[in-house]
Image 1: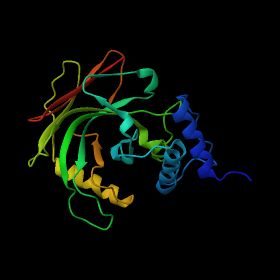
Image 2 (image 1 turned 180 degrees about the horizontal axis):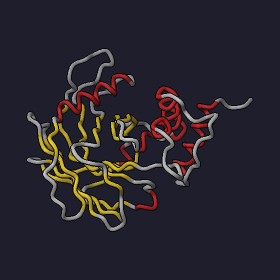
Image 3 (image 1 turned 90 degrees about the vertical axis):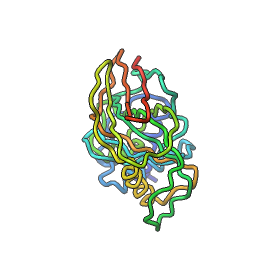
Image 4 (image 1 turned 120 degrees about the vertical axis):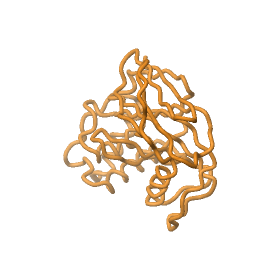
Length: 236
């Protein structure tokens, strides 16, 4: 019996994730045409690979919209890490925060998430598609462009807004105001839409306060969070 489109798309993406080879655009007959289909494919990829997500990640898509996908603990790197461009196809970096949940997110609740601590972070999106995702649905299916997350220092969640800047080299932009609590509340709403999360899981909010930057050979990228510190990575 011929496989259904969701199963076929899942197989293509899971194989690309496993072997690291680039993937041609999904054929029109199996390319997801809705967010629901794309999220079903992403869930199938995780199941096929045997990966258990440790939380969810809300990040900017290639078209500038925000998309939601899983976060995998195996994709965490330490501050100062080197990014291998040969495996980060169509790589893009943005400032991010990772929040650790002190209590479960009930899908039916609307209360703010209980964040016990945050980590400063640099989020790196990538793509398994040879020419990048055809649209946001293709990117959601590709685990929402999950690449790597470079983690900095652990901090308490600020009560007041902060300024966030993403810098390349010696540039020192002023940064953009950000309300971290509002950002995590929006991420929590996405997690609840997808069924909730247990205590100890993480919420990652990326694309914060600054333009997204393309990865370039030899570049050093730094995300600065006024009053909290900064986190950096270099491109190899």
